[in-house]
Length: 112
Image (cartoon, rainbow, N blue to C red; front, side, top):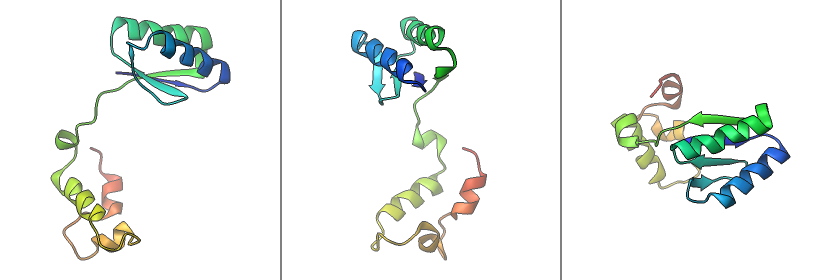
């Protein structure tokens, strides 16, 4: 997919108009940003926005996030356990202390 992010009012307006006119290319709309299908026409729309608005438009190629392929089992299990905790106000580090769940400092330093 192509992620198009706008940083100026006139660029947002052009993005909004492109999304309304070409709904079949838009995967999802986020206000200042949109995901376009990764087709030649999606690329055409993204390039057109960049051509018209220059640095006020950022285009990135993205891929869907597959948590089962990209995220280690221990991290997914920790997230599930943390969301199932009894006391919803308990911070993660306190929750993970004394368990097999990874601590947040270690997770911050490891890339996926």
